[in-house]
Image (cartoon, rainbow, N blue to C red; front, side, top):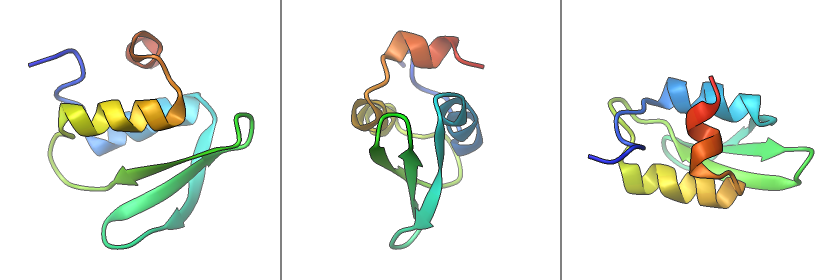
Length: 75
């Protein structure tokens, strides 16, 4: 298990809000689109129960252009 394992949807959203992301719209199924006005970036986040797979969280952070260390430090 890596450093990005064990994060739930609510934990991820809380941290992403700290980076300036806000809910934009509901996408297909259980996915959501979030937007950051400062960086003009959209990200797609699955809203599933349980822990987010580490690879999925890495992909979200890559879309958002957020470094892993910065994400882990954000509370």
